[in-house]
Every structure is written in C-alpha cells, then in structure tokens.
Length: 303
Length: 310
Image (tube, rainbow over the protein chains, first blue to last red):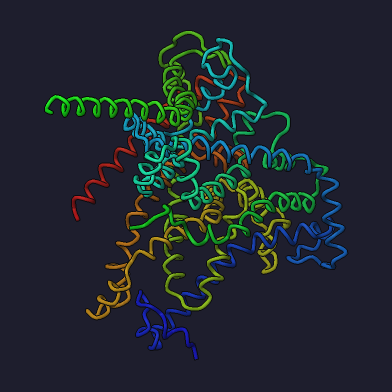
C-alpha cells in the first residue's frame, strides 16, 4: 500500500521497522505531529491575509476566520483601497535603495576582508582575524550610545568637527561593513579554494584585484548568493537602526511600526500593509528557494 | 662559478622579499577599509562605552569623571532587580519553548517518508516573513478582545477572551512563543543539514547489533546534533539576554514593567530619557557585558570539559 516505505534508508525508522505495525504507527504519529507544527506555522499567516480582505465591520462583529466575500472583485478593491490609504510607494522605493546599499556594503567590505585574510595573508592578519572572531561574540549594547555619538560627528567619537551622518542611510550602510560573521564566512569560503589558482594567475601576470574579480569571485557564486539573500532579508526587515538614526525617509518596517498607533488606519488596511511589507522578501524567497532550502555548499572545489 | 651561484641566491631572496612586501601592501589595501570600520564602529565604541560609563554625560557629550555614580543610579533604579529577573525569565522561557522543538522537528522530518517536502516548506514559512511584520502581527494575534486570533478561536469553543500580553504572568512566555514561532524554520533547517551528516552505515550497523529506536537515537542521532545543539544553546542564551526588540515593539515593557528586560531599559536610558540617561545606558551596557563575558568563559570551560571527556 505504501510503496515508499521500502526505499527508506536506514535511520531511526528503517525499512525493516516500517514493515511492522509498530514502526508504521510511529511513522504516522511523526506525520501527525509535523502536521500540527505546520498548522501552527501557517495559520497566523493565513489569518493575517484573510483579515486584510475583510470589511471593517466584519472584523469587529463577525469574528470569523474567513471573510464572507472573497470574490475577485473584492480582492482587487481591497488592495487598491489599502494602497491608496497607506501610500507606501515612496517608502518601498527608499527601503529598496537602502537594502541594496546594505547588501553592496556587506559584499564589498566583508568579501575583500575575507579574501585578504584567507589568501593574501599580509603581515598582522592573524591578529586581525582573532579580533574579528572576538567581535562576533561581543555584546552589542555597550556601544549603542558611543555609536550614536560617532555618527553625530563621524568619524570622531568626540566633537572634533567631522560629518553629521544622522538622518542619512550612511550609518546603516557603514554598519554592514563590519559584519564579522560574514567576514568569517567569506574567509572559510576562500580557504576552500585552492591557492594554486592564485599562484598560477600571478605567474601569468594577473594583479591581485584581477585575481579577485576574474578568478575568485566567479568561483564563489554560491557563498555570494547565500550572503546576499541573507543580507537582503535582514536589511529589509531592520527597524532598529532606522529607529535610532533616521527621522525623514524612514524605511518600511519603521513606517509600519509607527502606523500601528495611527487611528485613521483600520485593522484590515493595516494588515494589507503588513502583506505589502512581506511581498519583496517572499519574491526573493521564491526565486532563490533552491539556494535557501537546499542548504549551502560553501566552497567551489572539493577534494 | 661559486660566486655567480651566490649572486643568484641573493637576488632570488631579494625578489622574494620584494614580492612579500608587495603582497603585504596589496593585502592591507583589501583589508584596511574593513579594519577601519571595525575600529570606528565596534572596537573603539566598546572601549569608549566602558570608559564613559564612569563619566557624567550631558546628553551626547562627555562631562566630568564621576566614578561609580552611573552604576549606582542603574542599580538603585526601583525596578532594576525586577528587570534582571525578567531578563533571566526571557532566557529560561526561550530555552524551554524554542530550543529543543526545532531539533525534534528536524529529526521527524528526516525520518518520515510521506509529506516530507511539504511540511519542510510549511514550517519554513514564518522565517520568510520579515521580523518586524512577525512582531506586529503577533501583537494582533494576542489582542485582548475578540479581534485577536487566539481570542477568536477561544470564543468559538465558548471561553471568555483572555488578556494574553496584558497578563503579567504570561507576557514573557507569550513573547517567547512568538520568537520560537519565528525562528523554528531556520533552526530546523540547520539541524536537518546536520542530520544529513549522520551516516546510514552507522544506523545499519546499529540495527544489526539489535539496537532499538531509542538506542539508535541516543547513539547515532544525538552525536550528529550535539555540537550544533551546544553552539545554539550558548548563542541563544547570549542573544536572548541582550534582546530588546520584542518588548520594544510588542508590549512597550508593560504591563507595569512585567516584560521590561535589561536591554529594553538600556534603550530607554539611551534614547528615551531626553538625553539624561546616556551615562546610565553605558553603565548598564557594562553590566550586561560583564555578565555575558562570564557566561562565555563558562561556555569555553564546559566545552573543554566535554571535549576532554570524549
């Protein structure tokens, strides 16, 4: 009846277990538990979508899970109505601009640093690497106020002149330059690539920049993808740094947070805003699904 | 003949040295931007935060040396010990609710034959939702009237609405349920990847030796996960100890300070005190830093003990 049971590789349940009633029972109990967890995972999400398409009166009187009217017409009106009330267009463009900047800073700064630490190994690289590892474990909150003060008169900590970076995207971008975990990821990735590539290219007269861009980078596409997807998702969702550093041109997460206390935005419209905020990461996920769910194979060559 | 050989050797080592210097310069050109940013945004502010915690701060400028006054003000805050215990409760509940379930789910997904792929994707759904959206939607899920999802479901089975996050006893657990829900997918994926490392031969050998299901779980599955589990255990303690997003977005520290933790208080000192609390913010930062440093050292000590025992 259940043909797939025969091909089950050995594990906690192997094909010999699955031949017995006890093994099969355990298997279906597992499936049932996973089904419950899947429900827990998706029901809140579905509820948000459903509520976004309800009428205001329906939310405050009906208390039903699904909206009464779910026709195509209704969906289109709810979306266009909410879009007109929320006016998120400009914010979404700003957030995209800010997020792409975040990713660019992560890739350039952390990629270069990881490459230097792995392949060029200039004098003092061991000290730098140890400091980077320590940085990863350092609690962040002790530097919250000093960081803010640095951004008031960048790059100085005291008021010695310098540039006021508040209310620009620079504080957010510069923060991405020191993502220590990403530096280590890149270093590990380049460690896995053979040094003979570098040597061969150098003998052929290739410059260090040329080696990086023409040889190392094409071999590192998986890790670049992995880091970019992760950085983009974090950048899109970040509300805390904008909360500290931005007053105008605030990004979408902060806008959604502020809108919560806006009495003119009703619950269904607000939930539509939450959906608008989820669509970009959802698109990224759907495009890059294989890279995310398949796990990563960091490193270009093996063996 | 001899001379020329020596000459050659000298020039080779000279070019080698030249190449080494060139390599150092190039390497530092790649490294310098990041090192400068690490210095300006992480290393220097960490040291300055510790130093300035002993100074009187006038909003965001540094004043005179005042010794331990900032620390005294932090500890004498009427709610300091409540916030300390709240912080520990956050850690406790996050471990109870969020630590083992992802590993167990990963093991189950690894073992089932049917619905394997679909459950994996469904459980991953909350991870795709941006963090802030997840916080905001859960504040509505916990809404104290019938518009909230939980109370709506309760009303269907005829139970009066419950006030969830407004209940001082439930609020911290409630916030941790939210974070467990959000993080379940990514942690599950990580453990699932680790389980692929447990070799099938080991399981087959265990079966031949007559090991039952529980014995196989203990002797084959557990070792495949233990390193990652330990790492996640420590990471979770460290990150939850510092967390401030959930109370900041979902409860505002309420009701009556029941969900305020040290990180939340630090944010209030730093940015919501009209500039009067910035000194205390750094003093509190130093306190958190020291507690976590002790925890990290303890981790290294216990990690070494565990490694030695194998």
